[in-house]
Amino acid sequence: MNHQAAVIIPAAGRGTRMGTPEPKQYLELGGIPILVHTVRAFTRSPEICQSIVVVAAERVSATLALFEEHQVDTRKVSVVKGGLRRQDSVYNGLCEVAETVSAVLVHDGARPFISPALISRCLQKIKECGAAIAAVPIKDTIKQQGAGQRIKATLDRDGLWLAQTPQGAHLELLRRAYAKGGSEEATDEASLLERAGIAVCLVPGEEKNIKITRPDDLEVARLLINAGRKNMRIGHGFDAHRFAENRRLVLGGIEIPYHRGLAGHSDADVLSHALCDALLGALGLGDIGSHFPDSDNQYRGISSLLLLARVMELVNRQGLAVVNADITVVCEAPRLARAIPAMRHKLAARCRVEETALNIKATTTEKMGYTGRQEGISCHAVVLLGSLD
Image (cartoon, rainbow, N blue to C red; front, side, top):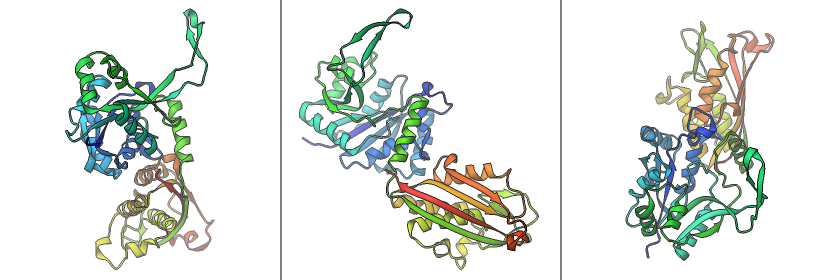
C-alpha cells in the first residue's frame, strides 16, 4: 500500500465566540497568524505530502498571500473555498486529495500546537486499524446540569475522552463515511465514520494541543508559545546620522514633518538601521554596512523597511523569530511622541510580532553632545530572538 498522507485543515469558520472582527484563525500568536503556525506544522512533516487548507471563499487569495508573506512552503499547500458547515468544508478539501494518497488527516486550523509526534502517532494508528482520533482522557469530575443551573447528576468519567484533532482514516474509508452520512449534521469526522459503521481507534493526544476558541484560550496560547521559544539570541544595534538639507526625515518607516532630513546613502532611517544591526548582531552576521554597502548603487535611496525585510529573511532562515525589541531614539528635535504609534505599527508588522512586543522610546540628551546641538539623530536597539518552534 502507498503510505503517502494528506491533511485537510478546515479554517472557514467565523470564530464568533472569540468576539473579534477578524476570524480567530487569522489572529496573531507571537506575531504570526494562528493558521500559519498550524499549516507550518504539516508542511514541515516528512509524512505529509499534501496540505489542503479550506477557508471562506472571499479569503482564498488573501490566505495564499499570507502564506507567501510568512514563507510557508506552498509547494505542498493548496487553498480551497469552504462550505456552510465544517463538514462541508472538509468535503470540499476531500475532493482535492490526490489519488496517490492513502491516509487523510483532518486538523482544526485553530490548533497551532500540533506536534510531529502526534501526527506520526495518528498516521501509524490509521495504518493499523483504518481510522483514528487524537483524544485525551477526562481528568475532572463531570457534572450534568439540570433546571435552574442545578446539578442533575455526577457522571462516571471512566472511559470518557475529550476529542481533539487530528482525526483521519484511509482515504477510501473517509470517502465512504461522507457518501453515507455527509448530509447529516456532524461535529467531527469520527462521528461520520462511526455512523458508517467504521471503527475509530483512540490515539493519546496532548494537553497542549489546544483549540483556540475563546479569549482565554488565546492567552493560554501566548503563554505556551513564549515558553516554547528556545535558542535565545540577544543583539544590540546602534546608528547615527547627521541632519542634511533637502532631505526627507524618515524614522521607523514613517515620514516625519520637519524642515531637515538625515544624510545617508539610503533613506537614512536611523531607527530601522539600528534595528537591523541588532538583528544581525543576534545572528552573528556582522552589521548593516556589510550586507548593504553604501558603495552599491542598488541601495541608493532605498527604503530601509526593505532592508529590514531582507534581514528578517535571514532571521527566519535560521529558524528564529523576534520575541521582542526595545528601541530608543535620541534627538533634541523634532518631537516624536505622536509618530511613535505609527512607527511601532509599521516595524512590528515587518518583524512579524505583536505591537506589544516592539517598544519605541524617544529621549533627549538635555542639549549635550551632537544630538543635543541638533546636529543629528542617534538610535539604540536591543532585540531578543527565539526559535520559531
